[in-house]
Length: 477
Image (cartoon, one colour):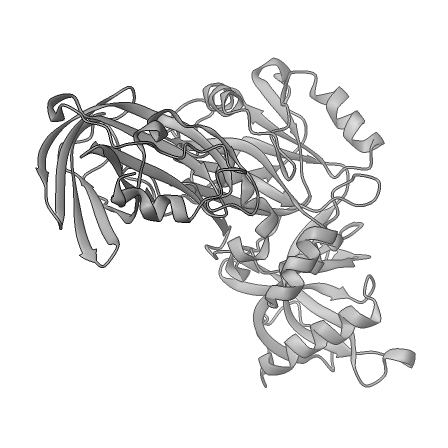
């Protein structure tokens, strides 16, 4: 048994794992040396690069995969040598064994060797998927970096985007030219752009906050997209016992800071990521493609899993879909023009929200003390909307709270206290208002807007930290 396989053998129980035990070291013509890249769904998803060398496989674990672009290097961790039989290995490594999880062959082929030194390895890959010259160089101990030396194989490849702002819909009636529109369910949740690169996921809210740690149950979606680079648009939704989206139920997840509480609720009250658009895929922006083409590319990804789904959209017959949404107690539908491109960061007439219920986001500018059981503490919120840069008073919200939420919101308002009013002079907020900095946004349900420009019968639905106060403007929904 070659001594450079000792470490490999000591880490494994070959009576349990299906991995090859390794026989005598083989020999190879370096001009036709083989390589394999294995996608390893272990505790942490990574890719294993193995090069045939001196009768064994020199191996590196590459957490984010082989970089396709010379502008970005990836970490590569030197691991123990593996036997040549591992070139063909794929399957399930049992739980409790070293590297437990699923091993799949991502690519294989031959490579040309240019250098193989203690601190530097340079090769040219000739695989089924992987081509071109790469260098691995050691940085510290077992840590190496892998760099593509050639230009990207795809000459039009674009760098992975840091941020794409979501396209927003305007509120309105059903479009008249029904056949030119697709209709989707309007999901009552938190909008999130999902960035998937190197088997990792990053979720970003409308106002640019990284909300990934709040929803650990969605991380498995990154494994489903392993080997692909994508940016998705969707909504994080919490479903109630009847299977309807519930923004109030989602409140228990939106504001958590305790890792223990997040883990517990991710199991007892898991959310779902509802995916409705594909904005970027494998080096190319799709923003300029029409809605129909983006949807086709999205459906080809087959993204359906335990905590994520890609609901269908329907072309035409919007009235029937609106009726069905109303019958099921849903908020409404969104109409999207078939030929529309994705207008990042804009509220466009190419997307129209058609609602069954009236809801709005408003900014909290103060509060009023309650009476009776609420005496001496928060009784109602004094809210407004922005109009030409000024916060305009829009009413007070006193219903929809339970005691726990009253205490939580009251505690958030306390450090925001200010002496003067944040509202414009007219219309004036009620006397006795305790003013606060306009930093909190809340969603309310309401009957209608009055002629005076205030909300009739508003009901508190919950605070939201994914919307910037300055983005809250009049929207007669």
